Length: 147
Image 1 (cartoon, one colour):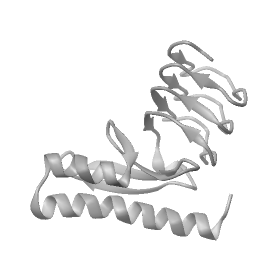
Image 2 (image 1 turned 90 degrees about the vertical axis):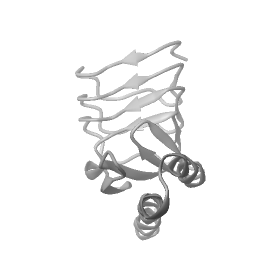
Image 3 (image 1 turned 120 degrees about the vertical axis):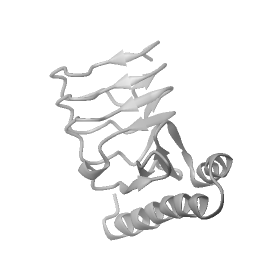
Image 4 (image 1 turned 180 degrees about the horizontal axis):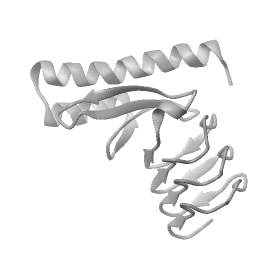
């Protein structure tokens, strides 16, 4: 296990060890890494922005996830959601579908609870529906191309 933050941003690293366990954040932004190892465990933020990765592994864990969703074949996303016009996206972690929206990263139920705390009425319903739509689209993608 790597005890704290592992910042590899901008390095020429091309791969990570299997079963890598990072005690805090893992920053892989703008790296040459093309794939994440199975069973990756990050006890903080996983930043993949600008990395060469185009597909998430079937089994990984992190507390927060940052990436460029349009670059990933197994991610579904919606742009301009909520008051901050965020891009939100859905991923499969190997156990459940997660929604990422800004600093939020969690299952759809917790996403909807978080939306209900900040929004109401049509705005809340539209934001929650965008999350559901991401998950439904991702389910279709994954069933068409099983990993």
